[in-house]
Amino acid sequence: MENKILFPGFLPAKHMPFFYNAAKIFVYPSLYEGFGLPPIEAMACGSPVIASNRTSIPEILGNSAYLINPEDTDMIKAAIIKVLDDDNFKNTLIKNGFIKSNSLNWKKTAMDTIAAYKNTIKKI
Image 1 (cartoon, one colour):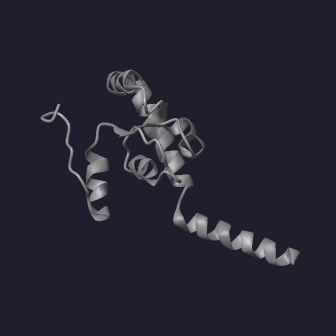
Image 2: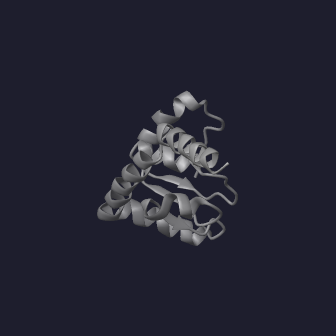
């Protein structure tokens, strides 16, 4: 497996787009996650995403990723094979990933936060 899968260890943030863009699939079997930025970053680079069906990840990613049980290695294997073998499915994930990643950005987050503060101030 070591000669077929890259295990690079820690990567600086500035290098991540190179890896996301080169990836055939981004697999994220997280058991615990806050928001889940890595899958969103991978989607923005055009990588099809397989991600955990735990914590906030399903809510954030929705139908833009293939959601799997992170503790079920057979399910993870089947998901990887499906994405590699089914071009229509892979392309749907990529398209949905671009749509999702474009809907989540820091400018929108800042504007939504300002609106929430303004709304709160009006109620005081």
